[in-house]
Image (cartoon, rainbow, N blue to C red; front, side, top):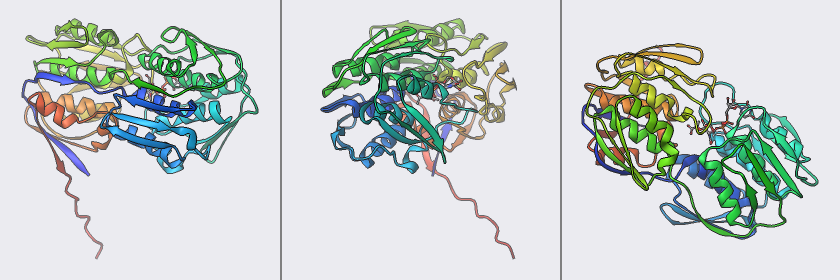
Amino acid sequence: MDKYEIKGGNRLTGEVSISGAKNAALVIIPAAILSDGVCRIDNIPNITDVSSIIHILQDMGAQVRRIDRSAIEIDASTIYTCEAPYELSRHIRGSYYLLGALLGRYRHALVTMPGGCNFGVRPIDQHLKGFAALGAKYSVDGGMVDVRADELVGSSVYLDVVSVGATMNIMLAAVRAKGTTVIENAAKEPHIVDLANFLNSMGADIRGAGTDVIKIYGCDSLRGTTYSIIPDQIEAGTYMVAAAATSGDVLVKNVIPKHLESISAKLEEMGVTVEEYDDAVRVTRTGKLNKCNIKTLPHPGFPTDMQPQITALLSMADGTSIVNESVWDNRFRYVEELKRMGAQISVDGRIAVVEGVDHLNAAPVKATDLRAGAAMLIAALAARGTTQIEEVHHIERGYEDVVEKLRNLGADIRRVPVRETAVPRAI
Ligand code: EPU
């Protein structure tokens, strides 16, 4: 197992190119199951979560051909089972999209309860409510979810909570149902629009994605397609915050600036300059950072997946900031790690009070989950001294070539093997 060693203090400067969106790839790859033809998908991020979902499809019999580092071709017509392999699926959250895709195509899915980052309870009741509205029956037994239907019939589904996963899972099941499905109180994240565009490019008829009412007109078959995934909003936001943390000057390329507006707005409130171009943003910081309050919300609000990174930045701002995490119950576990570096943060439930300090100091820390790991990177890049970050497999689940991209921007970062500590033997 490797760790990252980062000597803080270097200003990040230059250009970084953003990869395809993890959370779009994790749904679009299994969505290829719904097609009767071959789907070519471009701009796939080269990260471990994506490798896992590809392995799952291959294990179930799909033919997946890698065309180059960021493009694959999927022929899912050779799938011979509706049961997802347990060991591979239980580690990634995105495996729950197999439920909607297999149900939509084969009227049956047997998938493990989803894994992913641990931020408290992660229910899937809204997904199941949606499947049931379409006529499916489900049971949860021994950690496996079994969903089946004789036929799927379009229906109205009102989501009790705005859920990205439930919105997309219901879209997957409904696209090959009979008749029309309406999802109300739907999530509006950019990857929901991306999924709708992907399915529409295969011949589906989905309208309203990106608003809170989505209509899906069911169809009998879907053809193959060629599609390119949108850039990753959260990877882009992470480099924007890293530039701000190091008083840097970075052009973040291959982005959709509209998707970054909530992040840009908060950085500007903190005194950072963000210039927008057609498909890039330039982030420059020359002065001090101002305090600022953050409340995470579903899109177009401030994304919960940027909360740890912005909190790391606020820990070095002038004054006291309040961070309110309104999406997840328990997404402040990383704060204990930041405190090792001198951050002054107190957490009460979903609220963190961040008292800015003049600077952070290097310390041995670990990535407690994916975005927590990104927060540690940001803190380490700005801190005095050399920080070691352990458990970086969490970071590599979602950030393509992060060490290389940061080095190209001037960071002093390297991957080093973790030496096993000898455990004394009983005598
Ligand atoms: N919720 C329910 N019932 C459900 C589903 C969700 O109560 O059936 C609640 C959750 O407990 C949570 C809220 O609704 O409080 C939002 O959950 P959502 O379903 O939107 O989250 P998700 O689909 O499980 C995706 C991303 C997460 C990201 C959230 C919110 C994937 C694979 N994961 O999770 O991404 O935090 O949306 O934007 O797409 C990450 O990339 O680091 C990550 C954790």
